[in-house]
Amino acid sequence: MDHKISMYLFVSYLAIFTLFFKGFVSSFPSGYNNGYNNGHGYGLTSNLNYRFYDRSCPRLQMIVKSGVRRAFQDDSRIAASLLRLHFHDCFVNGCDGSILLNDSEDFKGEKNARPNRNSVRGFEVIEDIKSEIESSCPLTVSCADIVALAAREAVVLTGGPFWPVPLGRRDSLTASEQAANTNLPSPFEPLENITAKFVTLGLDLKDVVVLSGAHTIGFAQCFVIKHRLFNFKGSGQPDPNLAASSALLSKLKDTCPNVDSSDSKLAALDAASSVKFDNAYYVNLMNNIGLLDSDQTLMTDPTAAALVKSYSENTYLFSRDFAVSMVKMGSIGVMTGSDGVIRAKCGFPG
Image 1 (cartoon, helix red, strand yellow):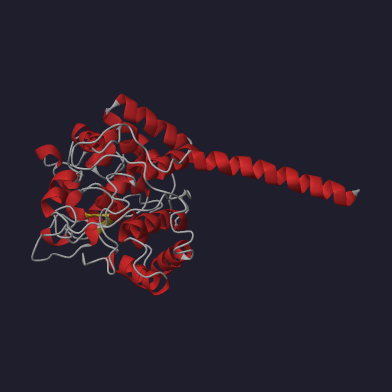
Image 2: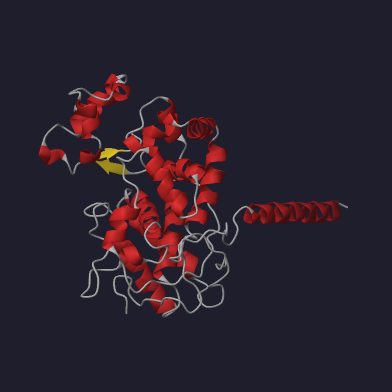
C-alpha cells in the first residue's frame, strides 16, 4: 500500500511539474513578431529554437556555464559586463555578434565606438568559451548565441532569474562604429529619446523599465555621474535628489572627486548590492537615488514610474518580466538559416 501511495504521489508531482514547466516555457516564445520591420532586417523575429544545438552540440550550455563561472570567480564585475555586452550587441544591427569583431581594412568595428570605448568588457571570456566549443563542436555554434547564453548565465550567477534562451543566431561579417554611436542609448539622454530607440527595434516603454533593471549589478565610470555630484544643470551644486542622501553623496564624491583623473574610476550602480541581481535598483529609484540620469528619469513618466513601484515591491514580478524582455531583446534582427556565418573566432569575420 505504501509503495502504491508513493508511486501515486510521484506521478502526481511529475504531472504538476510538467504542467508548470510547460507554462513557464510558454512565457518565453521562441521569438516575437509584432509585424515591425524597419527595412534593415531589424525588429523581432520568430526563427529561433530552444533546442537548436541539442544534437549538433549537446554540451554547449554546460561549456558556457562553466566558462562564465570561471570568469566570475576571477572577477565578479564580469557578470554585469557580459550582460551589457549582449545588450550592446543587439542594439546595433541586431544580435549578430558584431560587437565582438575587431577593426579591419573593410570596416571600423563597434569596440571603439563612443559608448563602448574603454567600457565594454568580456571579449576574452567569450573568445575562451568559443575556443572550448570549437574543440567539441567545430564551426557549429555562433558567437552571437554564446553572447546570449553568457548573459543569461551571468544573471543566474548573481542570483537573478533563469530563462530558456532560444538559439540559432548566425554571426555577421561586418560591424559598424557609426551605428553603435547612433543606436545605443546614452546615460545622458532623456527618457523620450531612449524609448524611441527601443521602439525602433520593436521594444516598448515596459522593456525600457525592465531592462534598465540590469543596473542592479555593475558599475559606471565617474565621468558619467560627476555632473550630478558637483554641477547639476550648471548650478554649481549637486543634484538635489542625491544631496538629500548626504551619506551617499559623500561616498560618491570620495569615489569620484572633481578632478579629471577620476573620470575612469568606477562607482557602483547599486551601492548596496553591486554583485547581487535583485530589485534594489527600483527601491533606489523610489528613493530618488538612481545613479545615472537615465535611471532616475524613469520616475518622470507616470507609466514608467508605476512599473518602477511595482518592481520595487515585488522581486518575483521583476525577475519574471526581466526574463521575458531579455528573450525579446535577444531576438532583435537575428540572422538564421543560410544568412550570416558561423565564425571560427569571434573577433574575426572569416
